[in-house]
Image (cartoon, rainbow, N blue to C red; front, side, top):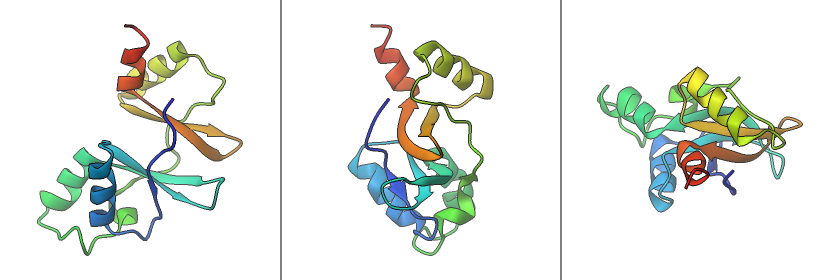
Length: 120
């Protein structure tokens, strides 16, 4: 799993999410609220930004991430799960990013790249 996870609050503008992802480089940001124990509200991916903002001709400086995010409940996994369980969930749900949540708080994220590193 990767940590720290890039997060933005629901009221952040899409341009802020783009800048954060570009600084990574990462392909998503988790939309979350709270201090250290962040509560997951949704996820925004680069493909979602292209489809919901750019393809629609919208201005990323005016659109809030809450308006385009894939909302919770997201498919998540616990930190005690195995890599096999993570891979099976990702294949079953056709997702490339899997938030790791413990007792309702975001603690990390597993990406398809993380899983590929395990098979080297």
